[in-house]
Amino acid sequence: MKQMEFIEQFLTKSDKEIAKFSREYGVDLTIEEIRQLRPLSERASVTWLFTGIPNSFLKEVEEIIGKKKLKKLLMYLENY
Image (cartoon, rainbow, N blue to C red; front, side, top):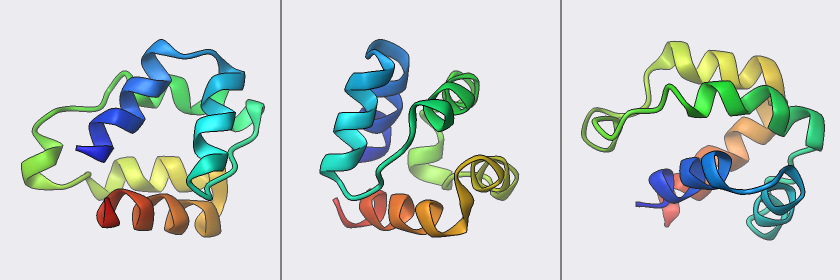
């Protein structure tokens, strides 16, 4: 469920609130990264809870936030 909570943050919170939320979980996204990720979050699907996040989507996220932050984000989503 953390995946949906994280995506919901992108759909409902301000850039600063998302930055604070992500920092609390060790991902530390910048405002610019958040703004670039917003359109991607709108494409998220609840079916990903069962099928997993598509590799093509993960690649787009990696292009925005980099491999290191993506790894931290995935660890957060998998562990909680």
